[in-house]
Image (tube, rainbow, N blue to C red; front, side):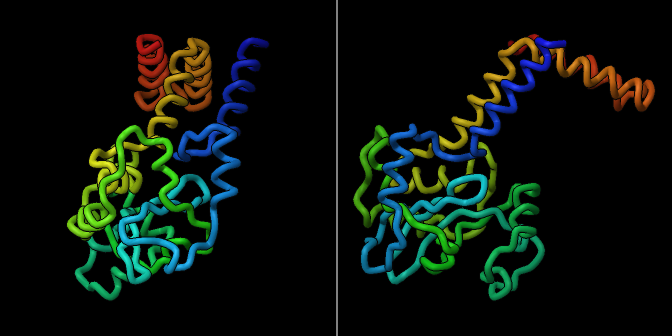
Length: 230
C-alpha cells in the first residue's frame, strides 16, 4: 500500500508541474520567454512573423499577415452548424471551442492582433531559436497561411495550431506541445505500478457497481494493455 501511495504522489507531482500542451522549454528558456514577451503593436511585427501567446492550459500560435491581422487555427463547431459568415467570424467562445475539439472541426481564421492576443503578451518568432529547420522567407510564410484559411480537420495531437504555424514557417508540421504530452503519457505507461493502480480501481468499481461489461471489461483490459505497453 505504501508503494501505491508513493506512486500516486509521484504522478500527481508530475502532473502538477506539467502544463498541458505547453511547449517544452527548459527553465532557462522559460525565463527568456518571459523577458522577451511583450504587448507588441502592429508596427513592431512583420508579415509572416510567428506569434505565440500563453493560454490557461496551452500556448496558442498564429501567423501575422500584416494590417493588424493574424491567421490562426482554432477549433470551432459553428461552421458545421451554419454558413452565416458574420456569425462564424464572431469571437469564438469556450463552448464553441470545446465542441469543435470534440467534433474535430476547426478553421484557419483571420482575427485582429488584439483579438488573437486576448490580453496576453506576445512572443515573436521565438520558435526560430529551437527549430532545426530554417525559417522560410516571411512572404512565403504568409502566403502559406493565407492558402489554408477556411475549414480544416482538427486533431488535438496531430493537427493543432502549432502544427499549422510550423508548417507555414518551417515547411513541416510539428508540435513540441504534443511531444511533451506524449512523453508524459509514456512515462506513466512505462511505470508498471500503473497496472496495479488501474487493477485496484477496476476491482473497486466492480465492488461498488456490480459485475457488468461496463465495469468488468475495463478492469481486465486496461491493466493488460498497460502491462503489454510497458
